[in-house]
Length: 320
Image (cartoon, rainbow, N blue to C red):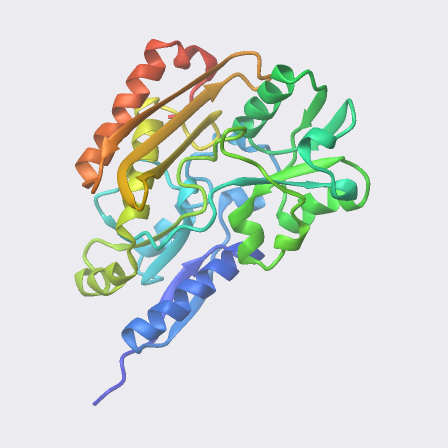
């Protein structure tokens, strides 16, 4: 019997992308018994030095991977789900959304400081208008004075701004630091009451060609129904706001329990101006278990409420 050829997994070249793709590759090897080889692909977002808000953000880290899938150069691809545009191409299928890592943002600060211990005028680096809006909003509400500084670069580069004394702190995703074994750098896990993460943050997306039905069925074994429902609700909110990956929009779906029993899915959303002076933050709940259609409706319903409260005017020029 002839051994099947190795599956080709398309991935970005960054340390984080290689780490998370490597974890998926291991899982697929165990699942299918086939070898998996990583195919490194450079995306526009990797080579551009512009800030994401300038280049639009939407799709800049995934388009090259999707093109490789459509050309048959790779069999499947792994993305950070928060980088995926909300519209799913008909030619591709989102085969699996594995269990989510910690979705929260974290502070990496000098001298092990927590956010509220930072000195007046502290310079905090972030490439995210969403983080800037909520950090500035929190600071204003609590009489703090901070300066958010736009930065780009991989995790090593961003943490380096702190260790080299250029910035007092940077804000990053917990999932990224955890996946590359750098959770010891975290000086504070930021509560979701302070900063809501990006829609889909901490989750991975495993994508293949829609015609690869046998592979899609195998990859579907890695899917986590709750994570998929949660990110479906979050991304439906993002889509209904007509906002792109770089817009100042935060969203998180989680489960609420009454004693030991899970009773509801809660979805929270926030939109704000990057200076933090105006924020629209609302939440809603829906019953569990949640079907994909119900998750979609939950997200769209909350977005409609946020738009009625003036959310569109806070996003500036919206990336579609």
